[in-house]
Length: 300
Image (cartoon, rainbow, N blue to C red; front, side, top):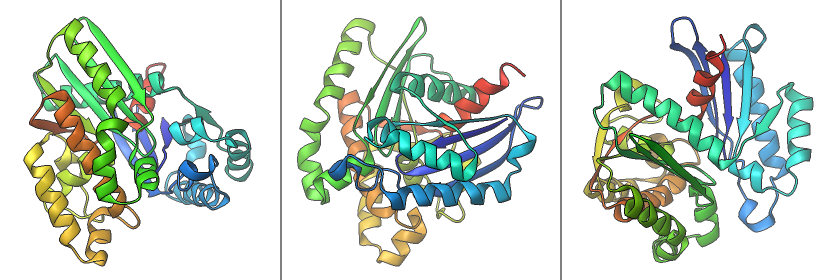
């Protein structure tokens, strides 16, 4: 089973062996789908070409013709005025037909992947919240023993970075920009009670965890990232380290074109710690693409 997740910043592909329940092949590329979207309301021609090029490259590394495939896309395409034209062009050039999924479906599939990974890690908590900080949206998924409460918010590292431009402006704007997240979280806590753990997924948490472990973008090892603990104080520490690096080193650490976005993401991440009244989280690499693959394997 091959799953493809076209996000607002990154294209992620994975192949799951359904019989063995093992991830076999994976591919990831920064494509900046949402680049300029905040200003124009459109996915740019340049972004479309980056997506097409990445998909064609992925096909040279993974034989798509031999396996069932499901491709999904999220907030950037949900918001784009030219979404239909973009998806038609991608299908024409690559043969891949993307499904635009809702924020609720994105949260459900992400939780499926996170729970699968937590089970493998033998992580004990039953009441926890997952934060998925994406390029164009952030999902909060509260998991209680008897209920899951999830919501997607149009706050992402690409859209925030391109709307507010500087880290100083971002830091000033976030309390108001994330007020809906704060209200939602307060309502959940009031009705369902506290959570015991914070689980973080997507590029910002995994990049900070990689810095903590001494990994770069080129040496990134998800098997070591999974289960890594991060404290809110470490977010300040690694943001300072990132900003102190020469530009070339930042790019090596975070990946080409990602360092400014990761810096913005850390500020969003810090605000989430504050909103959720947590001082520590566990990082999981698995996200939407793994959830799509796991779901697809259910019918195998």
